[in-house]
Image 1 (cartoon, one colour):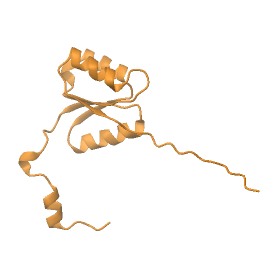
Image 2 (cartoon, rainbow, N blue to C red):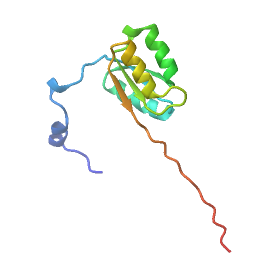
Image 3 (cartoon, rainbow, N blue to C red):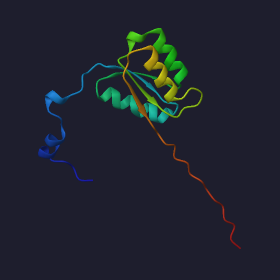
Image 4 (tube, rainbow, N blue to C red):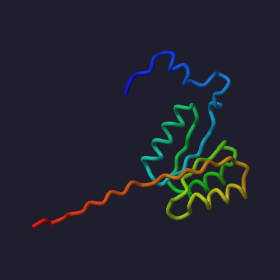
Length: 117
């Protein structure tokens, strides 16, 4: 991959007025620890304050206990137990928080052993 020159890098950066607000408190929910870690790292690079949990029930308990502690929720859709759709529904009914739903697909690799004569 070729390195970008200064002009290319400047074109890719957003103008100062188009930046996201810093310091948002984000509750990130995903049962996949790798996806959750990547999301946490991205949020920190955006200068957000992420809190991570691995299941929707824990997320809902945290939200109910301190509704004012979070500015938004990012949740995976497919999780064991309570899924992201149910979490989204309950957040919508009980509190006024923006929610971003994500869908991560697990890569499944199958190995076949062919015994050739």
